[in-house]
Amino acid sequence: MSDRLIVSSSPHLREDTSIQKIMVDVAIALIPATIASVYFFKAPAAMILLISIISCLVTEIVVQKIRKMPVTIHDGSALVTGMLLALNLPATVPLWLPVVGSVFAIGIVKQLFGGVGQNFMNPALAARIMLTISYADRMTGWVEPGVDAVSTATPLTYVKDFTAVQEGAPSFVDLLIGNVGGSMGETSALLLIIGGIYLVYRGVISVRIPGVYILTVAIATLLYSGFDVQYMTFHLLSGSLMIGAIYMATDYASTPVTPRGRIYFALGCGILTATIRLFGGYAEGVGFSILLMNTMVPIIDRYTAPKVFGEVKKQNA
Amino acid sequence: MNMGNIVKNGIVKENPVFIQFLGMCPVLAVTGTATNGLGMGLATTAVLLGSNTVIALMKSFIPSKIRIPSFIVVIATFVTMIGMVMNAYIPDLYNALGIFIPLIVVNCLILGRAETFASKNSTTASVVDGLSMGLGFTLALVVLGGVRELFGSGSIFGVELLGEAYPAMGIMVQPPGAFLALGLLTALFNVVILKRIK
Image (tube, rainbow over all chains, first blue to last red; front, side, top):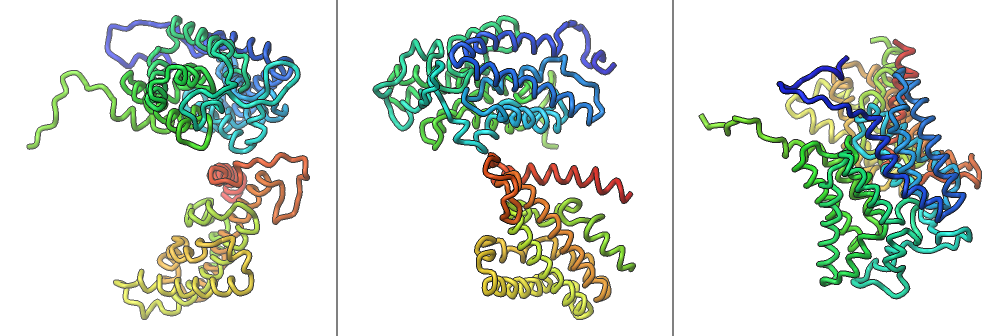
């Protein structure tokens, strides 16, 4: 009954949005990138996707049974987590790895903290970072797209520790359509952006977080390279910046609720990402920066709470 | 006080780690392997036993206003002794535990038992309390270290259990794994053991 209670004063606008509808929209937005990942990385990618989604759903059912709660896999949030997790893995990982990731994402990051809407971190991203810390070599087994599985570096290696794009780097066209090495779903910037535009059009996400996030990284890399536009574009299109900014930094449960707070959140993500990419030990910093900012959300929310209308500053009596 | 109750309190009902969350610094920092957990647990037990005994014996001579500094002096004496003994006889473990041996001085479990138990109870009861609290602490550290070592390196007490094919879960032997394992084990402890004794 509590979901029908109205807590604000009138007038009331009824919306028929539900978790299910939002999650279906996110899943639809991810479909182009998913198809591209299967197209570029062939059968292993499809297997990883399938296993990741199934193990997320099974974990959700098992944990909710143990917690004696109604099973809510029909809301689609576990499905989206499974898709995102698979898209965050390289296509070469052994098939047990997505299972470990799913159990961690759903069982620990999501359900232990109370289930959908209660997680303080993005489950798929937390699982990716957990897997990266635990199985570093397996999580960086990037391959060239295609059946031959020629191992390669991610495009970010061509700009790591340099202030200009190096010789032999993939072309911008390849970066856009995703014909480069990397995690399954993060390679095609164009398809991720198309999915993002769909989400903005459907009103699921606002352009605020991805916009500010990407812009911050753009400005930082532009300044760092001495206004080298090519260098900046390369940074924006490679790595997991697009999938992170559009799909994972916009997770409702783990981002601030106020519009102003979301701008600070995205700004923080952008600065951290640029700092790790330009000065840190890792080539990619998107995962770490979003998780770090996830933990800052309560503070951001506290300091960006809107003023109550008519509120007066406390007078010193 | 019933001796059986003191033992039960120390090991289960008021377990220093899973119930009281005391001495979290060594609990989280040195439990990467079961061996380190056991070493740290036993060293703490020895100090706790010594300090509880001496403080219970001296409780009528210690002015209450300066009791905390007095307790610390007693505890520090025992820690120094234990540290020297470990350095002489088990240098490998001594090196593995490093700074955390001198830090036993500030383990709040030991000062806590001195303040709440040894300074108020008979010497015999304090000896039993020191031993059982120490054992409860040791048990928790060994279980935590064992779980982390098993998942993180596939072995327990350095004995390969899961074989070469097991992909070691690196996060479990790193700091985040300590928090994860402690949280999950505390939950398990609550569900399995506390329900049974209640």
